[in-house]
Amino acid sequence: MTSISTVGHADVSAVPKAKSRNLSLDRARTFLTLVVLLHHAVIPYTYFGHTDPTYFFGFDMIVLATDSFFMAMFFFLSGLFAWSGIARKGPLSYLADRLLRLALPFVICAFTVIPLAYYAISLRHHPEIGFSEYWWNMITKGPWPSGPIWFLWVLFSFDVVACILYRLSPNLLDPINRLSLHGRRRPAVFFAVMLAVTAAFYIPGLVHYGHSSWFEFGPFSVQHGRVMLYASYFFFGAGIGVAQMDRGLLAADGRMAKVSWDWMVLAIVPYCLLWVLIFIKREILGNPSPLPDWYEVLYAICFTVFSVAIMFLILAIFQRFKQSGSAKLLDPMQADAYGIFLVHYPIALWLQYWLFDYDLPAIVKATIGFVLTVAASWALTRALRQIPGATRVL
Image (cartoon, rainbow, N blue to C red):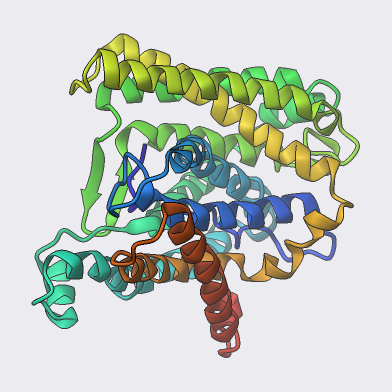
């Protein structure tokens, strides 16, 4: 599982501002934004990220689930509009837009949001160090963690690759698009192909690098074993978005939403098997490092099945219940979701710093942290979006 500093967020700015929007996708993105905030709110109270005296096993269940799918799904949702955006704007114009929407926020956050966030952790261990000294040491000496913003530079890299591939062959992703059109009536075929491809990209990387290996250069970081998994999700999304997305796998009248309970079973079974493997690692193998190759392979297989299945389940639910009142509750937050992602991290970590000394159950601490992080991040984003020109970035 990734640590508290590794969880990012989908490029919620990637959806074009067209007159006709796919509300199911908008709501799925906004829902995942809240999942990011929930993940960061509970991880201090888990076995893996135990940075608070209190603990609750239910949060381990949440973190295992979120860590196993939501980053990949964010790349998938971002990819949906990449190929069509390149075709509409041209590669150079498209990249100029991505520089504004991805590269600029990455640079700003790397120098402001990230130091503010991690100073809350440093202060717990080194209260004598002031913020200015801490900031200067981070920038000049390191380590310079990226927190959740690592997603931005990786996504921009995928966009650059997509532009190059488009220049080489605009029809390169047509096979995926045809598979999507076929998936309108037979989504299981698309599921099987996507599962096979993502497993082929993920399993070798996990076996070779393991769970803990990261590429790190200043604020640029990414998990070695997962980068190709993320790329495969991004380009599957891009293939669906090549053309006629409303007539393919994600069509409003497609069969994908009608078999939502099947996706639930396909998600629950590998999720339970992941817990079996975690038990074997801790109680039988004794947490060895490195783990045996057979263990890594079995874990990667369960991981990929769960990841694809839970993504299909979430998309199917939002398609199936798009007219429900509960789904519409997400609509007011939709325009602010990207900004909420960008600003939430220091808010979450400083709330955890404040709650650390209180003798409260883990559930109470996490609930307070989550609710206040959502409220404060949303309010701050609304305020920032009032700055002239800010909506072009946020």
